[in-house]
Image (cartoon, rainbow, N blue to C red; front, side):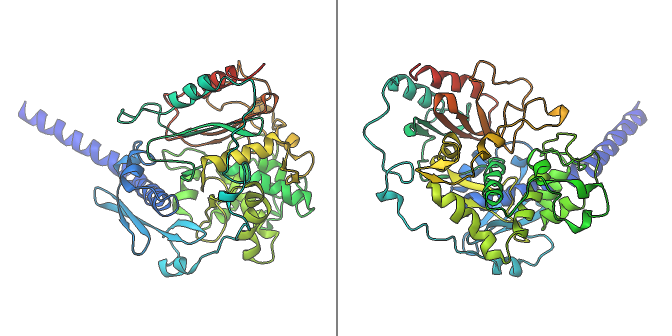
Length: 456
């Protein structure tokens, strides 16, 4: 009996060892990289307290296993799991935070960028370009009910996190009619937009297409692809998530997505190296790789990097009152168009308002005529099932959730962990909800509640 127990113990220990070596250990560097990068950006871009970053941005398993150390003097963060798999991220002015991988830290720190001066102060300019809110509000709205719904979306002070909403902004008929923030945050707080960055990037493509600098229907200019099937991929295929490249989009394991984000200094080059699996344009698959290809291709349209870095701010963000948003680059200098933007809830609402107004913002035609309509066209791949447009969602990607019961024209910019910019043209409505989970929060029901307070 004793020998049997010893053998059983050996088998269990061997099983644990195999699990650690084969499954757990390879994932630990991804966990520490995620934690270091997330903490660094949250502290040095958004100005968040590290304890709140732990409780919100890094609160989910297995990322919650990581422990971080913030160095305020050198603006860096290191992360470990049980003292192992150390990863470090450093902050660069104007370019955001980046992981220290195969490029020396000193070289990374040399990179910086001065975000252009917008030429105006939002403290002295009315909404939506500025932050002065008018006392007159659209008629016919039940503001008491509206505020009740918005306030109820936020967990009350001192309560255990349940709905996990960080911020809500409601814009109706062009006016900011309601907003609410989790305790301690306000309209100047910057939040991680995650994949809503993809939607911002699609607007940048629209601007370049309108200027004749990108032909979205032509094969993209990637020399490594010229002699194979990948050479047929167009910008339109990338915007529709239909490149056909081999890809797995899974943030909780080792996948192309996590290798790109957590282990690649040049994300564009990493995606360029992927083989092709489907005929370009024929198969829809949501891919952050496609989004970062778009970023690198935008960079190719500029003769020098300064023009590339200034472009989002001068030609899009600052034109529509988005002055408190940073788009981060990877170590090679490419904007991480798939995932890395930090902005205020009001900034995200302004972006939604641009699309609500068909690409026009206060009589400034920011997006070319027809771009918003193109954005809302379904991806043509047969398996897209009307779910996705041009870096915007036409339905919820969660099969257990749908936009049934909402106006047919609703569409949204979506981000990891429940970030949303909803645009409903027929209701003249934009709703922003930011959070660190959507497990116990129904975006669908929340929108229905808000719509119920508006005039018929």
